[in-house]
Image 1 (cartoon, protein in one colour):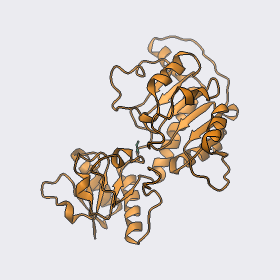
Image 2 (cartoon, helix red, strand yellow):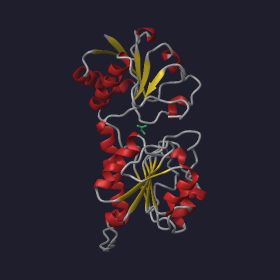
Image 3 (cartoon, helix red, strand yellow):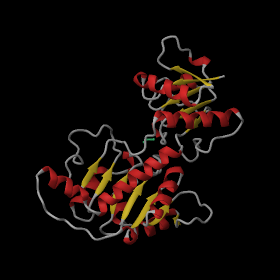
Image 4 (tube, protein in one colour):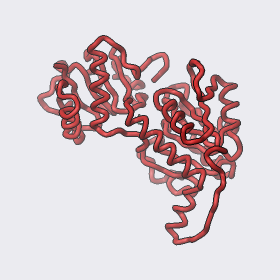
Length: 313
Ligand code: GLV
């Protein structure tokens, strides 16, 4: 029997994780990282999200670390990250479907200017702000075409939108038109009505979405950020919104989080703020995914969502 030490989301989350693993993966022995009797040298795997400073060094002899998030930038940039241990990102159907659901909601909210409806409702204003652009007339540009980006692209395409994506790795031809490199980026942005950021946070993508980047976006284009907050230069986004070039934004991720009280995003009439909730699968579904990944590793395989140091995600 393999042993999985659970550190993800802190001691308060242990009970839920314990029950989830008991239900979907009784073949895995779980132990709380926070149990005073716990000895890291006795565990084969660790489930982590934001481990306390120094904790990851204690995982250096484990077979793998599994992250309860799809993004691992919060782990791999740290001094105590054990570089020789396999690290696997969160995946699974529920994560991808939740992300696609969220993006669909965000897109329709932007198309219909639902932020204005919400503001009007607060003040009991009956003003019929009709919008006429339909899904078929709307081009979505997705930044990133990995596990989540490709799932979102397929779902949006099925929903009737025109969908393209920008990605780093050249791939075989797909139904979704893909763009690569600097020229591809400019071409994609130039035809994009709604931009969806799903890139991982790496040294190449931090600060990527700045004034220069946004200047290539089709006039009237909007932004949905479900990647990481550090990829967007907040002041540049606010300027684009305030100048009238960008009609709206839906933001789920910020730098830092929680979003500070004095952030201009909170009360901005063109911005939807959500508290980093786009795609967190239930503990049960995450446990099932983790158990599947552990099964693959035990069978000598490398799970598809294994962190790749050269790629940075
Ligand atoms: C959350 O943002 C995650 O990385 O899954």
